Image (tube, rainbow, N blue to C red; front, side):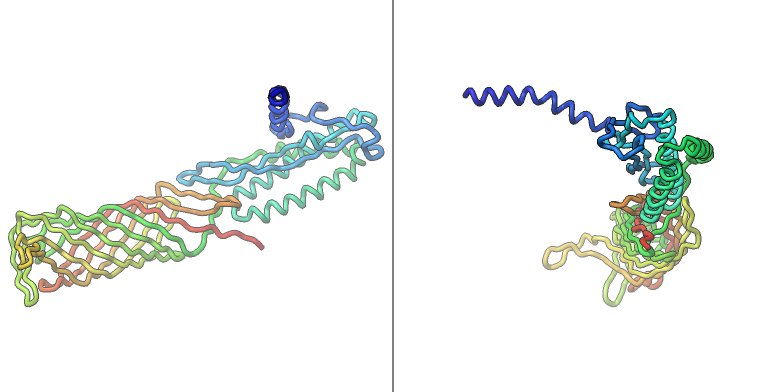
Length: 384
């Protein structure tokens, strides 16, 4: 029992120390935007742990954080870069400190920030080339660090430090970060999407006197291939009115439509189109297609088995028209662990169709619809 209470007491005493240590990680790095370097940002090492005649060393780096930006109707998720110095790895030696030593460290810190801004501009413009861009600037900065240390004699040559300092300040003023613009977007040739919405169909003669506007829910899938547009969809009719009683005799089946009942049915379609206009906010796609259509109504009669007899007629459906996509939202995710491009559209479709209904003959119809369309493509990365 005494051992138990002793362990509890030791654990209680250790908790404040653990909390203090874990909080320290937030102060282990200083970002360039936090202000100029100070002596307090460097640990102290004495002669026994340093190279001869070295005032100190700045341990710098560039870190990347995911951010979200809005550019017009584009939501852009990408990596943003930050220049920082590692306080734990940066040090100075009091025995070799010079009046200009802090200028020496600050100038290197400024040159890293200048190159970070240049790199960020390239990343913003070409996010899919991030591997090549980051590798290029990593090698460039390593070379710059070595050259700077050599030409300034690791901070002992005051004139060389001043020369670099003036140049760095001029470049900092010249490389103000520009507002983010829409980047180049390269996606694969093939994408995939889906849509859902409403479609109305107005039959022409001879059905225009009998059947009112057909209302239906439309569901479909899209596979864009480069500028080509392919879609497969189906419609389910609901609440469509019959204008008057009608009886149509056919050798195989009689069609008995009654005004007192609504008619249903539907269609299925395969469409092929081409994007003649494809802009960030709008796309225009003429298309043609084929499929089938059917009209259905319960007759109210019962067969010998007691089942309700359904009056159904259908046939081959040919069509042609135009699709207008109003892109209200686009999204681009260009991260090393997640990458895609997508478009969210309000799509308006108008087309003519010719259906060869069995027993009735060819019937033309005018169709119009509106739906929500979501399509996405994987991004293409340059990995050479």
